[in-house]
Length: 173
Image 1 (tube, rainbow, N blue to C red):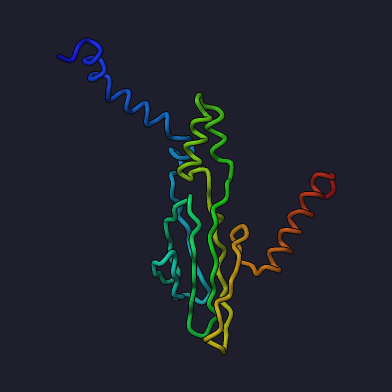
Image 2: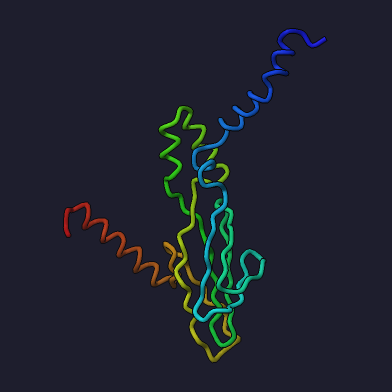
């Protein structure tokens, strides 16, 4: 015999289950999901690309899990091999809906756990450099705001960003 409260719970279980699922997902999870589409294009085209162990040929579009860092190696006969990682960045989108809606702090946590509060910068076209030494080691580049740079170039880009921000906050043009 189930009893009054047992029968009530059985009737309301689907509703309670649906509300529980909705309460455990954040705004960013619902609106944009846990994966992001990234387009990879090279000059020259038809380069062999390995993303996290899976082989592709440029140009192509891939769906990447927002929560993870993805390792990329690009090879083309007669060109330097390029290696870099696509690293997700927090972009603040989850704050918008989660702070407006009731229970938003639960949504922020849910978005963070599943990675929906992260995103990848759009990759610029990757220009491969010709080489006469096919056995050279892969050129390690860093993805900085969707552009691939060497260590020295990233340092200059970061310094330029800091300088621009400082000028902005000082009220300089």
